[in-house]
Amino acid sequence: MSANIPDADALVDYVLDFTGSSNRDEIKQCIFLAEMMMRNIELPALRTDPYNTIGVADGNGYVPIPPDMNRPILFFNQGQPGTGGELAGPWIVYDRIGDRDMITEQLIENLYLMPVNIPQVFRGKFSEVGQVYQFLPGLGAGAQINMYYYKSWPELFADNGSGGEINNNVVLQSWPEGYVYGTLHNYYYKRKMPEDADKWLAKYNLAYDTVLDQNNKGKWSGGHNKMTSIWQPRRDRRFTAK
Image (cartoon, rainbow, N blue to C red; front, side, top):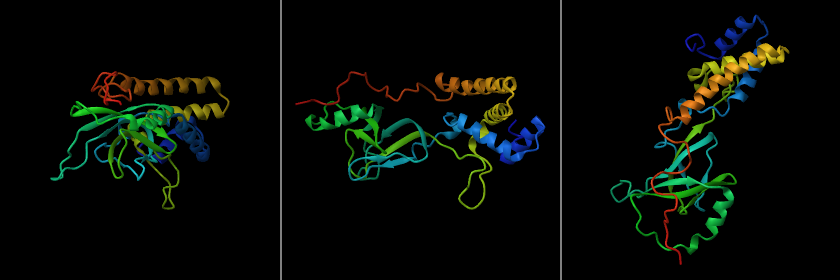
C-alpha cells in the first residue's frame, strides 16, 4: 500500500478515488481527524536514538522535557567523562515514580549518606514535575541524561515553517493503513453513514491493536515495557540512612 501512497497528496487522491468524492478540503479534514486518533501510536520509526538524544541538567539539576516527546521509554546515565574522555560510570537506569513521590523523596534526600556497595549499573528514580524531569540521586548542573522515547510527529498539510505544507511523515511511510482506515472512518461518519463508518473503524482498531500487540509481546520493543529497570530487585537499598 505504501508504494501507492508515497505522500499526502497521493493519500488524498486515493481516498477521493475510493469514495467517489471530489471535495479535497473535506478529505483533508478527515485526514486531520484520523491523525488525532493515532497520536499515541508507538511505531519503531518514532523512536529516538538514546545515544544522540541527550538531556542536560540546568543549574537546579532539572532536565527540561523535550518538546517532541510523546512517551518516554527509558532514561539512563552513562556517568561523566573521565580524564581521558571516556565515560567513567557507573551507569544509572532510572525508574519512573509519581510526581508526588518525587517531591517527597527529594525532601528527604539529604538524610542519605554516601552510597555503599554500588554495582556498575544501579537504579535511580525520575518523575515529571511541572515542565521538567527531576532525578534521584540529584543531578549536578550540566549532567547528561540519555533519553530514549517515542517522538511526536507533524500532521500532514500543516505549515512546515517555510511557507509550505508538510507533505509526508514517518507514520504515513511506515503505517499507511492507519491513515487510510482512519480517514475513511471519519469520512463516512461525517456523511452520516454509520454502518460504513463502523466497518472502517473496526479495520482501524485491528491495525492499531496489531501495533500495540507487537510492542506488548516484545517483538518490536525487545523486552518489557515497564518504566522500571531490571538490574536489581525492587527492594534493594541504594543508600544507608542515618
